[in-house]
Length: 375
Image (cartoon, rainbow, N blue to C red; front, top):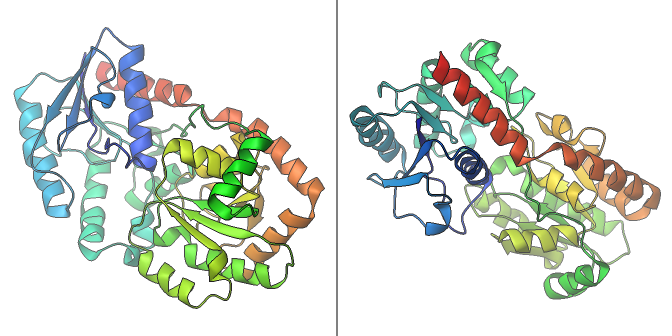
């Protein structure tokens, strides 16, 4: 088979949720199926590290697709024209975008429909494009992959797609995420938090990640706790920075907040593995990888009790109301004071983390690809 894969999110040092899904799944598909040809489509010069095996053929198409107008040109013209001219059996798109008239069966991965629930949190042009085209992508797709049962039900409900057309393939976690030695934890705290313990939030700084409320809840926590403790926010700045900066200006304990920025996987492992707990109080997620990474590092998880997060975390998280400052603050206090609770969360989390494996994800994707091509 000749399989085309949209790999435009593979950019060195800039991989986020969809980028990691693309990298981890695409490289396994090529590695595990050397008898097939995989064509990786980029919208700009690619890094050689992403051309993982000899059966991968990279193609660069213009223009760089980083704006709704350019998305349309790249997918519906440049990519569609290329797919029509060359013999491909299938197009796989980890970011959910597909060409609508390419004459090739397409499998998009639709991770979530946040834009349907919180349309005001994206730039107007982005939201317009998503709401106009994603229903059409879903309808035109030969099959859809998503990352949680929550998102599957949401796609069915919002777009009227029959559930049998959607397959759930959970995200995985990288094997680097594992418990750190106490020495490494101490060294990490000395480097990043002046030796003080800290809570950490990891994830792109989007409005739905709920960073302003996490900051305000931390202020409440510090006001009621005499123990030195800090809060680290790690992630790529995106659409939510204005509100975050405004909240920081009004905080009493702003000097105890560390804005760590975008981190490498190695840095993320160290910072996450050395934390008191992960705070993942997002109010909308199609999945949510950081809680599972924390569990694999034997770090307790404070998580919102909404959308796909309970599906991912099971009984291995301390749940909070993401819209309640008091709920988030109380959870921080419990984690600090209740050693039995910490131990229980760590034990449950270490078992739960074993359920999330990129090999399993890639195997599910491959099964869908085979079934689609055989139809």
